[in-house]
Length: 205
Ligand code: ADP
Ligand code: ZN
Image: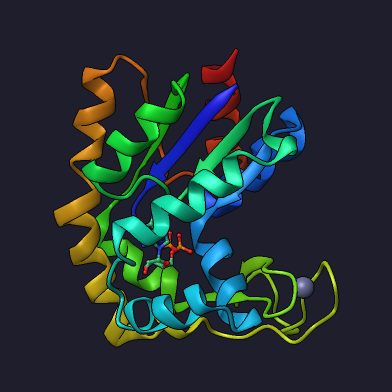
């Protein structure tokens, strides 16, 4: 299975991606996580990407496409993968289409005006990448590794608005792109986590 999960920032696609990959034993490829790992490791790519990410802008296509290609060639992707946060532009979608054919593009539909609040309450583990919310983790500790949760640099209020604008301008049009390709599946992303997951599982049957 070669899947894409799409949705605005704060739509819950990272959470759903983790659930899908666990159940179907797919490689979970999050370009955001790969970029944050490069930043944490101090790589040249990480240095180039950080300013874009902190400003809520997209990292340039050539950098992200090269990163994605290298990741998809890893042996764990042979039996299937789920792309989370890629493609984000039409150029990225075209580049992907040249390497693989996508079986399904899951699109989490959301209320854009509720997303800023969701992102303000998001907390992430700086060590293992686990993502949750203030409400779900009132003790402020990572459920996976015990580390103290933090607010991602790009989840600050000022940056969130910019990310939503960038999403509308660059990424939202990909819904039509995959609809035209005949692989789009629309899911109501405003439901509870379990209900969203149940709809996704029904669509994958
Ligand atoms: P979210 O889905 O919540 O916006 P991500 O972790 O997917 O969070 O992405 C965080 C940031 O990483 C983006 O705002 C962008 O700067 C960068 N990024 C991730 N994936 C891509 C991509 N495919 N193309 C360009 N930039 C990307
Ligand atoms: Zn952790």
